[in-house]
Amino acid sequence: MTTMNHDISGASGVEAGADEETATPILDVRGLTVHFPIKKGFLSRTVGHVRAVDGIDLSVRAGETLGIVGESGCGKTTLGRSVARVIEPTAGQIVYRDTAGRNVDLAELNARRLRPYQRQIRVVFQDPFSSLNPRMTLRQIVGEPLRTSGTVTGSELDDRVASMLERVGLSPKYMNRYPHAFSGGERQRVNIARALVLGPRVVIADEPVSALDVSVRAQILNLLRDLQEELKLTYLFVSHDLSVVENICDRVAVMYLGKIVEVAGTADLYAQPRHPYTEALLSAVPRPDPRLRGAGRRIRLADDLPDPANPPPGCYFHTRCPYAVPGVCDVAERAPLLTSSGSGHRVAACVRSDELGLAGVGSEVGGP
Ligand SMILES: Nc1ncnc2c1ncn2[C@@H]1O[C@H](COP(=O)(O)OP(=O)(O)OP(=O)(O)O)[C@@H](O)[C@H]1O
Ligand SMILES: [Mg+2]
Image 1: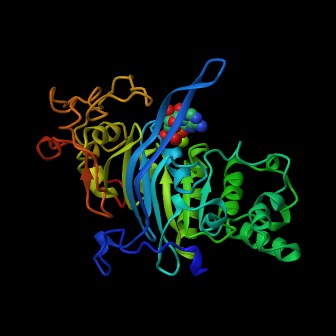
Image 2: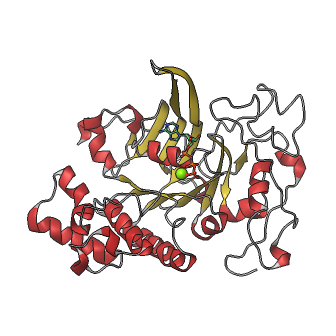
Image 3: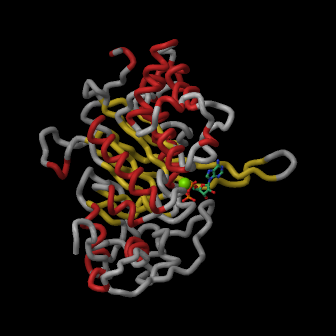
């Protein structure tokens, strides 16, 4: 379908044949912005906007798992959903490299032209309990994307659903049962089957294990890992749980108030954070072994997350940052913005990144 593509090759700014650090991105998000209108009064007049995603640049490499972390309300879900265009972006580009190696800006496609790409980028929604329709059987839930895409019908559809269920570790003999008959872990398997049944290349997993018991988490994470290898998937892994992210992600992007404040390889980020917000998040990661606890002190952030409809001037984090310099961090012209997240280089939006020597945590993955 060549006519459907807007070839904007070269827009990624990444050299072909570059080393692992700068591998070609499958997704290159630029200036992505999602503002939700705040409506008030009898006439529902718009009185402001929640800046849920506030001008994000982010590259996702083919085959990697990129974690998105940050406090509740920082915009992780909105970012993930807008990349898949489940939520409409207000502005920005979502450059997707298709199977033929062409770059397509998904943000500018109309619904009809977007459809083939929506099969390639799927979302596993946040809560396996509320995201499955209780009045639909597993056959209907997992088969729905196939039916609406109109590509498969009848017994072929049943076969596809059955083999997908098997792949996620569920017996096809349960196809006619309803979600209430299943445990949280099994429902999340159904959720994953529904996201994968169209054969996507990119999966946006929104807190895929947060609602599950600890004992079930490892099983679902292992399943996600196996499926990634088997189906050559790229994951955008949204989570507020830094222990889970450490386990499954190759790189991590840290989000604060609709912006990315730091991006780095997982081991690098955990050992040596370069943004004070990352340091504060990491200080809460449990480490039973005291040798791995970094500076060993828990940094307690004041509970006053600024209003995302009215963010502070300069660095958004300066109102809670223990290292903020008055006259610098609170001045828009002087606080750095994360203008380029590259596709691998570590970057942090902090004027003091180089001088602070922030504390990270030792690695538990693969032993101390
Ligand atoms: N449909 C909407 N209309 C208005 N505001 C919204 C809407 N969806 C999200 N928001 C707001 O946008 C901001 C980001 O929300 P989002 O759900 O993306 O955060 P999150 O990081 O996923 O949080 P959590 O960790 O709790 O899931 C919040 O301030 C939220 O209240
Ligand atoms: Mg969320």
